[in-house]
Image (cartoon, rainbow, N blue to C red; front, top):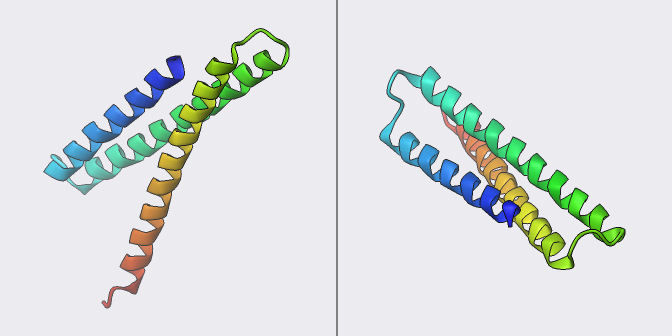
Length: 104
């Protein structure tokens, strides 16, 4: 269940950052870049933590200390977080490529 809460917190943080980003950076482009960088760093960190928790629960299930439903829930939450980070990465790469194709 803790994995579900961390996924919800990650989505809430991403939604807040997206709402702030739609308002535009308040103190220049550097501030917006710093917020975006912090959001990405936080998302990757939380994804890593979620994956580690899923691995620990899987190891616990292998020796009979963890319920299978907890393992499935943690692995599913980690998978969703990883897919979200990968989707963001793909969009950033696509945007970068679009910028490179722009005429000067």
